[in-house]
Length: 188
Image (tube, rainbow, N blue to C red; front, side):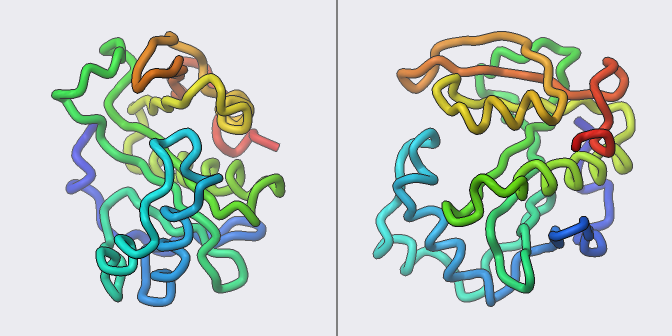
C-alpha cells in the first residue's frame, strides 16, 4: 500500500446520504469509550475493554490517525471505519497481489441493522480508491461473525483464504476495482 503519509489528512468530511465520515473530535470521547467497552461490539475482536481503563486511557480529544474515520449520524458518533496498512511483520496470509491496506469497522450496537456500516464503508473505499487508484484492500473477519461476512460480500470482497488464528476460523477477502470487484458506488 502506498503510504498514507502521501495524502492530505484530514480530508474534507465525506458526506453520504445519511452519514458524515470525519476525523475524531472531543465530542466523540464518550462514544469511543462505549464502543470499546461494549461486550456485543467486542465479541469478535478479543472482547470488551474495561470501562474504567478506557476512562483513564482515552484522551479528552481522541487521537486523530490517518485512515481513521469517525462515522457521524446527525452530529453524533455511531462508529468508525479504518483503512490501515497491515503490519509487515504480522503473518497475515495475504498473497502479494492482495495489497497491504486493510478495511476495519466498528459500530455502536444501536446502529446495527440499518445499513450504516455498508454506507460508511462504501464512502471510505471510494475515498481510498481516489487516493490510491490501483491499491487493493483486504478485510479479515471471523467466519462466525455473520454480520461482517454479509457486509464483506455486499461490498464486493472476494475470498482469498480461510485460516485459524486467535482460536477461531478467520476469513480473508480482497476488494479491488482492478480485479473486477464492484466499485463502492455500486453497492445498494
